[in-house]
Structures are given as C-alpha cells and as structure tokens.
Amino acid sequence: MFDSHAHYDDEKFDADRDQVLLECVNSGVTHIVNAGCDLESSKKSLELSEKYPFVYAAVGVHPHEASGCSENTLDEIKALAGKEKVVAIGEIGLDYHYDFSPRDVQKEVFAKQIALARELNLPIIVHDRESHRDVLDILKSERAYETGGVLHCFSGSVEMAREAFELGFKIGIGGAVTFKNARKSIEVVQFAPLDMLLVETDCPYMTPEPYRGRRNWSGYIKLILQKMAEIKGIDYSEIEEATTNNAKRLFRV
Image (cartoon, rainbow, N blue to C red; front, side, top):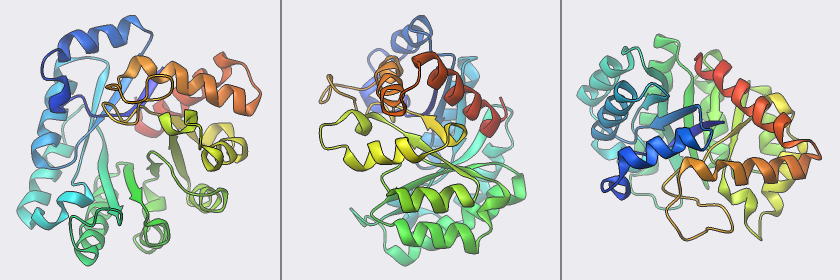
C-alpha cells in the first residue's frame, strides 16, 4: 500500500511517531509521501525520509502560509528539493475556505512553485479547497501539465476530474470517500480510470469511517481502498496494486 499524502511531522505524532511508523510497515504500508506545508515542515519531512527507507518527502509552501513566503523561502525550498528523497513540490495550491493568506498572494506563490517544479522536473501535490476553477486555470496557464502531479484529497466534481485528467493530473482519494455524505466522491471514483487514482490518508486528519474523529494513520488506508474497490466493483487486490503502481510512477520511486 502506498500512502501518497501524510503529515507525520505533525505534533499529534510527537509522543509516538517512531512506534506509529513501525506499525505502518507491519500493517502492509510500503511507501509514504510526507508533504511539507512550510519551510520548517518541509525540513522535517526530509528528515523523516532520511530516517525511514519507506518515507519520501514533498517540500513546498501551503496556501495558508503563502503570506510568509519570500524569495528566500523559495530558494530554500529549491535547495531542499535537490535532495535524493524529495519526490515532489507540495503541498501547494489555493484555499478559499479559510483565506488565511490573501487570494492574490496565494495565486502568486502557487504559480511560482509550479515554475520551480517545472525547473526541477518534479511533480506537484496540489491543495484545492473551494478554489476549483482558479486551481485549474493556474495549472493550465503555468503549464503544470509538463510536470504532472496529483490533486490531493480531491473534493471536486466529475467534470473537474475530467479536466484534471486531460491535464495529466491524478487525483488523491482519502477518508472522505467513506463518509455517509460522500455522494460526490463516490461518483468521481466510479468515473475515474484506474490508472488516474492515488490513495492517501492526509493523516493525522481526514480519518475514515468507522474511526472518524480519531487520529488518522497510514494503517487505515485499507479502509479507503476497500471502499474504492466496492465502488468500482473490483477486487481489493486490484485497487491496491493499481494505486501503488500509479504512485510509484508519479513519484518515480
């Protein structure tokens, strides 16, 4: 199993991080991409990747942190991105739900990091919350299709998924697909070609049913895969193998 998006640098793992990561391996998880949200968490992601053979790092500035992103910050992100275990620029994008950073600043920082990814030939991990149209427009205008990537924790419609696939972007499916009100997510999984799907926990957040409300971890990824297999009417082993191979190809591991 390949958890394509996690945050094991989060303080919610401070008490037992090593123990949890060991248990991930015991539960059948073979690969984890730990995504950075700012310079500090990007450094921590890299440290985790260098400590654990099965952990890989993504480095980048989340839209929440865009206001504090200077040219210096981007230079440091670029330096981190040159390290061997860094497989993507991320998570980057737009968040219009909280608007912790002004939207024009979010857009500028998003575009600059796409340009960095193109320069370094790395895929991107995209955060998109209530900003679907602008995310797609920036991906097109900044030629993000040259690097490819994944729309993580995908919350868009079938129509948006179609546009993402046309740009060569995969979509990440997380715990939300198991929620009782998951109609849109279910429709997207039904529609999506098998080779365009990744699976993720976004841990410690987005815990799937029946554990919603608890701290999430990569061992729960089986619950998401089981739901995806049920939706698509295929064997569990088929969805597990497909999502793992898709992520290996995207992140080149």
